[in-house]
Length: 107
Image 1 (cartoon, rainbow, N blue to C red):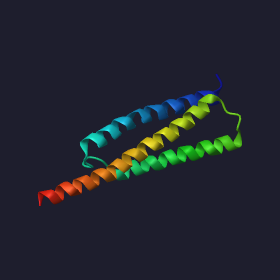
Image 2: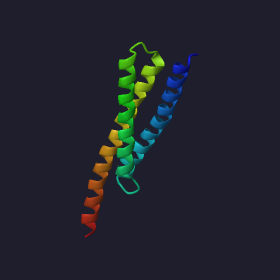
Image 3: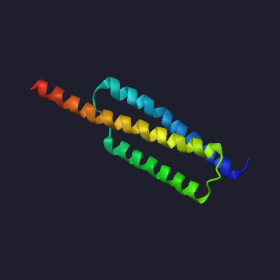
Image 4: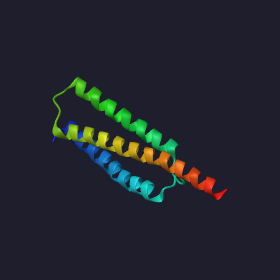
């Protein structure tokens, strides 16, 4: 197996592992209906990191469009992960709104 293929496989596996955690976070955000314990700052930086990863893939593809399927698999995982974290960030704003409504009801 050539080195580029190994590197793309390792990258795809890394992104897959990261991506497995987002559905858990989304579920927790959906069910808990609170933003307490969540950090938007943290999620924004991870989101930006995924943007950089996607940009890197565009650059790599532009330099050599003849890529194997593992390259495209890694690229797909970037898009999947950024979609999942975006959903979790939207839920954060929903939950902040719900937290504020609960605070108003207490007063």
